[in-house]
Image 1: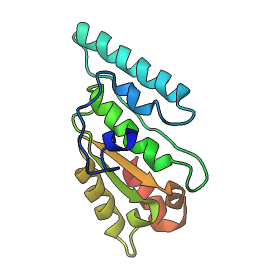
Image 2: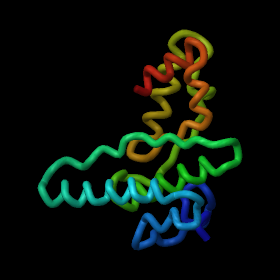
Image 3: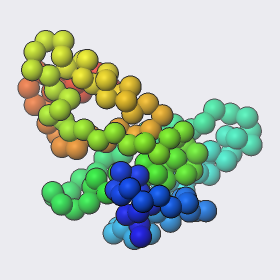
Image 4: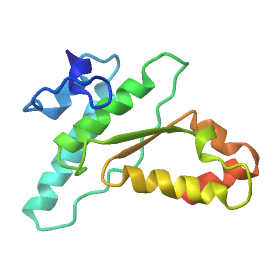
Length: 146
């Protein structure tokens, strides 16, 4: 059931839950993430009430061995951020560190800019981001992202 509510995980469409954080209920060890997302929700409510800018979402880093569900968690969090009105779209663009690094001078910046444009308003998930620390083009990709 959870899989059907996570964009990109299935073609099934269900109505969004009244509590977007419930999308994380079926996932393992989400307590700290839920607390952080709930703090974001509260900061957003205060900002709205006081007429301030929407708080920044920041970045998430998912660590773990292959097959431990990092992509599933990223998809769920993208849906949660949209449900909490912290992102205008539930869209998630998935790429990898290797896909962002170019093969010749100038290509890396273009690849990164293209993925950022594609993900605008949604979430960019970079699988195997550790590859961005390798080689000249990986460093260029990391510098462009930052």
